[in-house]
Length: 166
Image 1 (cartoon, rainbow, N blue to C red):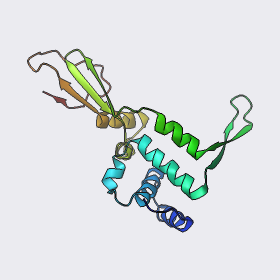
Image 2: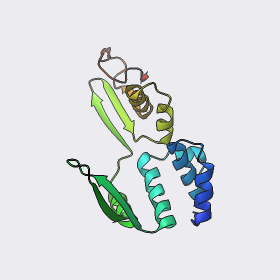
Image 3: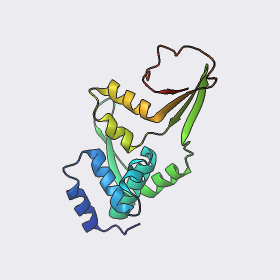
Image 4: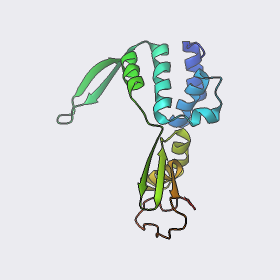
């Protein structure tokens, strides 16, 4: 882990100005974790990546984090302050499952957490529905439990084009 100095932060931010928000976030994490490859960083789950971004933010600007939310009924700004360390403590205490698995009929599904590479692939989609489909397809695998069973594939799966391993 490299020390976080304001010059490092400004240089990394400036270099990322021509990138989209996802690219800028990955640039920050890449500089903070020089021992990791770009592919390794893109493969971090969104939660892992965002935890690292929070750590960077805390080291660069201190623990206090101020923000605001608009009131749902009147639109007035509600200001608040929280600590980066309290957010990280809460996030680090959360149990995240690296993947979920379930069975439906003769099919075994497995879904991992989405990562930045999945989101980058989704940016090529024509609309939100197509982007969601790309992420679901990237994160989900399907296997037939009994290859001899000739159960038809359900027609209503939103992610129909996932390759089913036989």
